[in-house]
Length: 120
Image (cartoon, rainbow, N blue to C red; front, side):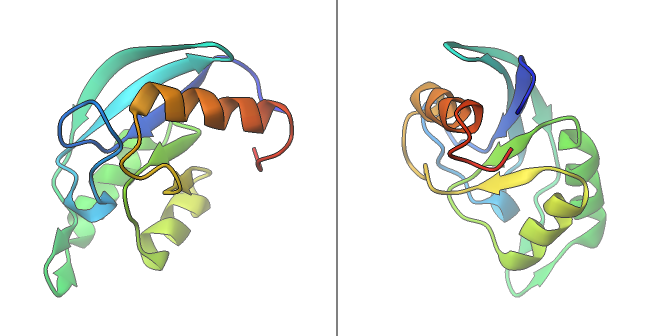
């Protein structure tokens, strides 16, 4: 069972949909969510992690630091390596709402977590 409110990070190009790949994100929007309400708290700037065929480990460390207080991060796409790094700090990577509206997706996710349909 989770305790509300929870914080969720979102990778979005335009602020409307979950539209950014984890490795390409230059910022994460941080939302505070209760069972029926989302509130944008802040936007946290990060260096993007994916640099074509290689990755920037310094950027990854900065991203992990910037979202470590979040329950989950919502992305359009994410690889296995970053997913494992997030899991190691207790942050879930969520990509099943790719390209869907941010608030509706966060509320749906929180409802599933609260009812035990999703791992907390």
